[in-house]
Length: 114
Length: 113
Image: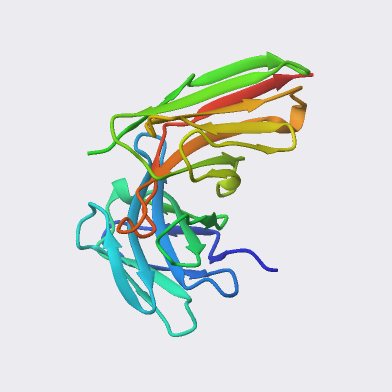
């Protein structure tokens, strides 16, 4: 069974640009969550999608957005990039029942903002 | 907001030694998860705990869900060089916290051959 796939692995952008990251969940998983990982703040929850609907959201500005498609694949978009957005962005998939969940992470997209 | 305090922050041990790390929270969680992360990779799920007092093993790893539901610990027995990495605890409140895990700061484990 293939794991969670994230593309691209690495991205370099400049301030002010926007970026789109992609995540394909484990087959059969309908929930996709996104996390930001930085040395200073650790792993922080961005948002979660299930059946193309955002069910939960963390404390990030509106520049961070996402969506989910009917095949459960998800994309995350960051607009007007800032230097502080440099981070490892991780997505995780799960069945989506909301109870006794196991979240499985992808390898992440390393974003560098110059 | 909820915070998880994970300790120790780092450990330097000899191959063959046992390792213990723990997480404490000011809030109650319904689920505790333990992950390991290696450089350039995402966290890999090691053990999942769902009931207070639950003790679960996965090979040389053993984890327990504290009876107060505010803490958890992870033990690694007879460490080997490939145990090197960062270990994270994570807690989740079931039902409404869809997809949201609260993570500890991580324990950096170094194993000397």
